[in-house]
Image (cartoon, rainbow, N blue to C red; front, side, top):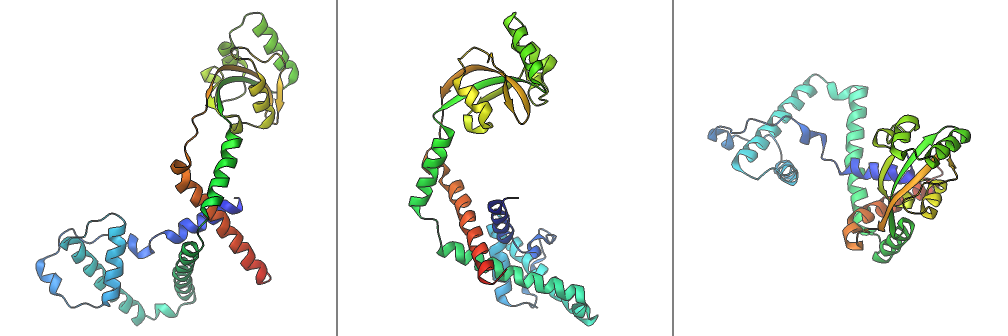
Length: 266
């Protein structure tokens, strides 16, 4: 995993609801009398859990409130029974409790850090322009035939020059399992989607013609056919801003993690 991927994973994990939110739901409708039951829990717990459930998409209703009350009372009763047996004193249970407490604290801190350290708009736009330049302004509908050796690629070129159909040769000879059954078709792509030797050859190739010189990559030898070229449909900055912001926020967060570890000699 890349460091950015790790940071994204941390952000996602810390953003998850508490494990308690995954507890089995109580019956949809509780008898009216139960709403008057004494509460074995603080009001703050009820408010928090209700807020968490509605944030997940559940509608605030008498039924939901009754279910939350019943769940909190049941939890407290179970917790009391667990304490009677001294389960909270067990090493493994105490470790899990410590980790759960730490997770809540870390989640709150990371959320606070992200809120107080937003990625500047200028940085987002700069990254957008960099990615846009890498993608380029054109897309190519390309097919290829992949073989292991250069001699095999040259044989493919010779057969094509004699009039063989590209799609037929791809189905018969290509080693690319993802495209051979489609006659080598790789669909529409920007050059940045391919390794450089492949993309360089694709950009230079004449539309409607195959490459007379096989192209070598780490995957083997390719014979390319550029079927068509069109202007790339690049999304606007506003369209990709949320995803771009999340990606760059993860990068900034990862840098903060690394600086924090370095500062503490880790």
